[in-house]
Length: 241
Image (cartoon, rainbow, N blue to C red; front, side, top):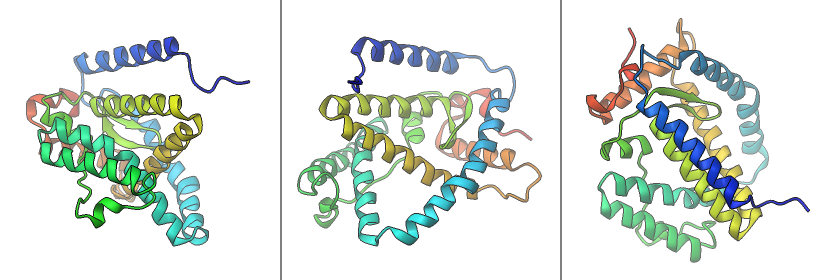
């Protein structure tokens, strides 16, 4: 029988290797603006094709054939699975009341809401308080690292990508010890949510612009400039003329 739950030694080794890579990228002294541009442009092109030929057609199919009550239940389950991220993010940002609300939503919807199918917490007046993980990391004083475009995710930076990836991998590993099926479902939901977010990110740049990649990059870097201090934004994360 195939072993669905990985050996802890291999997971630990993989996490260590990933952490080392992220740390190296964070500590690297960038030599020029947008130091990862060749890779970023390739990922931008991949995402553009993925949205046009895979994600949008699937979204259209889902909107036509999946009943509304099932779509609402799926959204509720996804939001419940992402509440732990908001607990950590609000805590990093120093917003303890919001972190407490997110924790309360997680506990209530996971139990009374039958695993998040029903949003009982909102009916009790505990509403979802979203926060960008990148904003939380900046609030904690961490540098952004290089500008980065991820496949099926879109624009981000090395620090945010490393933190969120570690969060997802850690959550998957913990869930896999409870149920491999639940861990797989969580991973599928995370990927689906990333694809949905990518559709939004893909709409931001003017596709008629001479360089849509540069437009998207500069929009994201303007967001960083609004949420992070200048000392946290590495040299290659400054807008390129």
